[in-house]
Image 1 (cartoon, rainbow, N blue to C red):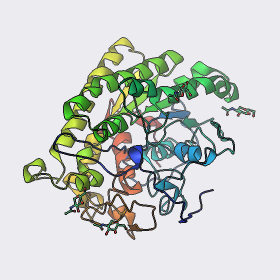
Image 2 (cartoon, rainbow, N blue to C red):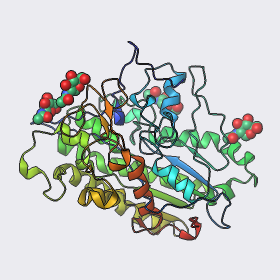
Image 3 (cartoon, protein in one colour):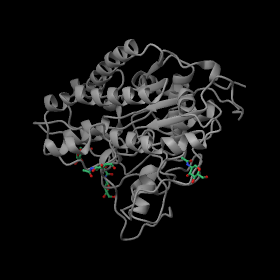
Length: 413
Ligand SMILES: *[C@@H]1O[C@H](CO)[C@@H](O)[C@H](O)[C@H]1NC(C)=O
Ligand SMILES: *[C@@H]1O[C@H](CO)[C@@H](O)[C@H](O)[C@H]1NC(C)=O
Ligand SMILES: *[C@@H]1O[C@H](CO)[C@@H](O)[C@H](O)[C@H]1NC(C)=O
Ligand SMILES: *[C@@H]1O[C@H](CO)[C@@H](O)[C@H](O)[C@H]1NC(C)=O
């Protein structure tokens, strides 16, 4: 199913966070958004036994920073055009085949699972033949992942109302939450305890990243900076509603990431290549206005998380600071082994940032670096496994989670 067929029917997926192009014109900005997370500096041997009192499963929602196969499976059973990440060299580093992850290897969610001694979190969707949503045949005892590449925070109805196409498909946060609720009864029946409350109590819920695709699509559609900025409170609201709903269902520990420094993404740097010198941060080479946009989202999100914490003192709502966690790469790339810098993609179609919208990573026209671990960026939009590992470590061992994750749950050997 995942053979690399560079035949004539090969078409790049350019929707949503998969695509690498951003638009910026005198009248509007657009940026692409992506998700990354992950930090793990320390190499550990990962045992499989569980620590008493720690998380027994991971339940995940989000976009391409967290998708472990849902979008790819969706294109398979719906017979849609395979996305660029259905082809090598995606997946080359760890899985040695494309898995539907937007990276050369593992994502933050994979590292977190491994550090918690859990199996890698399987995607909810399977690769069934029928043109219907097909749940995968996986065993979901230790977690289930609903994240979909390109997913938006706001739903299809919202976009219809404001007259914008939602080119990402109908995979909004609410849709993902609907899948979860639908599955919950059988999920609980199948767990050894058979008890939903217990299952959710001992689960780590990862809620994001989500929202970046909304901003990106809106910019692409020609909305002004101010118009897109007005989406931020709406998106933070959607995230808050999802958190509240999950708490009602019994979730106790939720980790909610902010968005990454999108002004540092090679796709955006390539797209806005005509920016004036003063638009770049002299320390990092990143686009200041795009990073400010990300920080604005993250600020409103944290204010909202504080309010939820006050209303639900029995819960642990963790803010995952993906922004500052990843910002380290741009401030001092060589400290993390990124000797090729953090602003150039390992895999791409040439140009100053190795990003070329007509030759995306995975296409026959693209080329890939020999050693992805020397790069922070994999395809211009998403991080390499090496970068995700650092991000994961920054989350698990600090200081990029507020409050810190219970480290007694992290397996150190
Ligand atoms: C999106 O999916 C949900 C649930 O699967 C469905 O109820 C809704 O009608 C769909 N909306 C659109 C616009 O397709
Ligand atoms: C629960 O177990 C049944 C029977 O083995 C299986 O058909 C179903 O898919 C399982 N559900 C989940 C959510 O794993
Ligand atoms: C800048 O980007 C445009 C398209 O976004 C491209 O046509 C042009 O060649 C790029 N310039 C440089 C110097 O890369
Ligand atoms: C982008 O890719 C196209 C198609 O392979 C190629 O013709 C073009 O030269 C590339 N641009 C750059 C700047 O490498």
